[in-house]
Amino acid sequence: MTQMMRAARLHAVGEPMVIDEVPRPTASGTDVIVGVKGCGMVPNLANVLANWETWYPHMPLPPRPAIFGLDPVGVVREVGEQVVNVRVGDRVYVNPGRSCGACHECASGVPQQCDYWTLGGYFGYNERSVDMQLRYPYGGFCEYMLAPQTAIVPLPENLEFRQATRMGYLGTAYAAVKKLGPLAGKTIIVNGATGTLGVGVTMLALAMGAARVFAVARGVRLLERLRALAPERIHVFSNVDGGTAAWVRSLTDARGADAMIDTLGAVASLESMRDAMCGVRRGGRIVNIGGTAGELGVDVKWWMDEQMELIGSVWFTSAEAIELSRMIGSGAVDMSVLEPRSWPFEQINDAISGVTSGDGGFTSYVVEIDAESRRS
Ligand SMILES: [Zn+2]
Image (cartoon, rainbow, N blue to C red; front, top):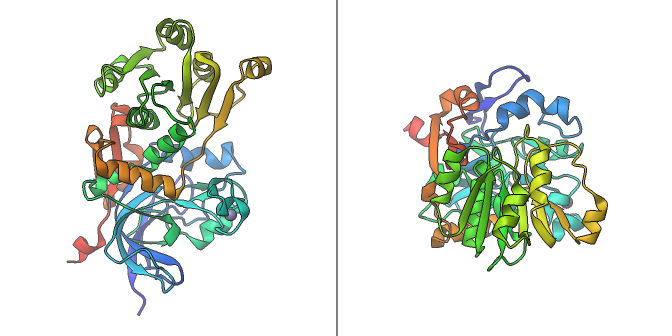
């Protein structure tokens, strides 16, 4: 007899999610089944559900009815017969990045550049993404999800499940910080520093040796909270009060910072990004991981003359997630500064609309899911 499970599904854009009973997947080949304990609630999900297909028609949402949920954590419950290095009972994060696994880019360790690259339980990056969404139609908002073994990231013992649902945002921040190269003794501007990505970038830049972080956002209250993480190394600035570039140059003998990471949200002004970019020194490196869109108006002569490096970064690899997991396990990254706020699975629609606590990137939003406790 087919075993069933609960899954929150979106049947049509504009409708609330419905918790349906659907067949529980089983593992074969190189796939595994993870019993989900919780799944991160992306602050951007309501926006994606409402607007994505209008704003970015080339970036498909999964076919409906769809199981969303970007950042699942749980316990491995089944492994396919070809699985070698993942065991039943392992506590894991499931990297939602899906790719073909067989092309040059996948084999080179940059699956984000694969033609099939997709964020499972969220959206795809091109039309071939639909193939991956059909093969792996399980985001984290269900009791048991199917995932390829290459997506499995072991969690350290000191990381509880609710905190671990932050791995997606932190991994994205980590991959961006890595692209800056060795940070020892360097200075970095973080634009949008108090948001979900910005807090992670700040934590990781410090962990990886940055001498000084120039943290830029709007609200002073959250900036002060961020500065308290390392008052000697973090300088904060509200760009409501003036220009970021001038502020950074005033702190660096007019030279500018070595690097910058932009994390602005979907509806932010690009003026703030352009201004912050002008605070980066000649030959500096600028990475964008934010959700904003539009024409930036970069002066290409500045780009060449100043030898600037402009880099786009999407998500992260499972290898990077494993590195991050180990840094958390060793204490190099302290997750206790983040505060999970959770909803039970039954209240998933409240969670989607309830992710505005006012504490910016210090809060992690989690939907708690646990089939075992429900049935015991
Ligand atoms: Zn590929």
